[in-house]
Image (tube, rainbow over all chains, first blue to last red; front, side, top):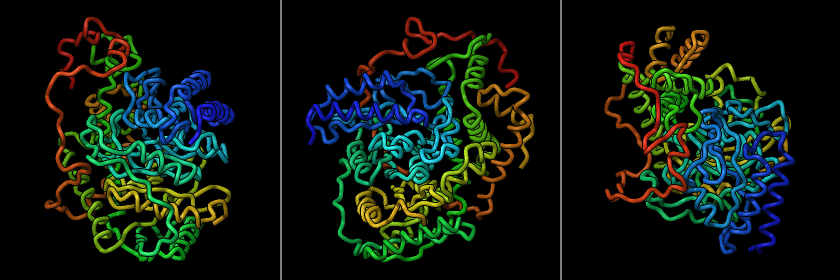
Length: 462
Length: 101
């Protein structure tokens, strides 16, 4: 428990640390506005809240009443939401201090935070590299030690992938565990708010607060908030499956070494580890890059220059207004995905692409159910196929960029919870290992993550 | 799978998106590559019996259908580029403009 003077010190300290890492371009909120707000929030926050005085930054695609919500896009430049997202309202009610908005790929579409209209975020350990994305700004602020935790969002791995690349913890909860009210929609059947934290404990505390029922989101399950498990002495009784499809022949040998070491430590902690098969994994990225753009093309239809944000004017009629605003307001990756999404939903192509992808999604979800039905509690995989890549390396090759999500998209397609925990360094750069749990059994997943985090020498070369 | 410039133009019209002529070659090339990549799912034998998977609650819950004030801190007039008397202001819809679509 901390007192009001400590909460105020925490607010000022957070503002100072965010200034120190300004060159990483992780925080989009002007520092003067942020400092003033943090101090006011610390004075107003209720001391009985479980997160009293804890500064938590929020990804720019999650609505906040206080700061702008631009989704990393020109089309929403300067936009202020007239309400707080439920996750943000819950953080405030728990006494947390909203520490500004973080940079991200436009509307969450990207894996490097290079697709932000406000410039790319830099990797905290090597500024020539990307921090991952799309929640790159949140990962950077936590990795740089500016904040203990930040909210991100996931559609295909946008919390876990930057967590892995920056050496922090990233949790994607079960679909329906956290309200999506106020999360700007990208792919509605995939989107979830997640948490990045400097430790499993910090991330789990925030997740526990933002989880639970919400009458404002009909896809949010009627469940109580997540109860935090205790740190286990051992993993005796846990059965952890290692899916062979996540360890292909051409996997970076250093990533394989880091994973092998983590698996050995899980065994030493008492878990039974066995190989399993998820046979449809090879089709996950293709399935995802049909479903997500299809949903995005529909969700982003609302940005037309009439209802939100700036209007790119000079148009003689309303259709031209829509087209000009969208053509100039969306960046290249969003334009590409809107076009691909419109294409796969268009007459003549729907069955070959979208309907088929929906069927593949069912098969991918069934693979997980089969593994869990055979007595496996959790799955362990690499989070990303490589450590942080160079800025610009994949910018002109969308398919190569999409493949950096190869190990994360499956949990989104199946609606399952997953966590990335740092498991070592590769040539000085962090790399994460992923635990995928059963739906709504985040507590089991967190227990194993606590144990793995304590055992693994995350700062050592793999 | 090869997407032509005309197809990009047609899809851009459906998506209400201005795409300049100079952007067409790159967009057509990138869309072709993406669509070629995702088409690999057709290698899996058709599984007509498979029910699409949708995560979340089995039944969508509905709120009571009653009129309640919107709990917004401020109204649409402050969000929209142009707003008057409860309406979003836009230019007129061009007559016969849809002939091209």
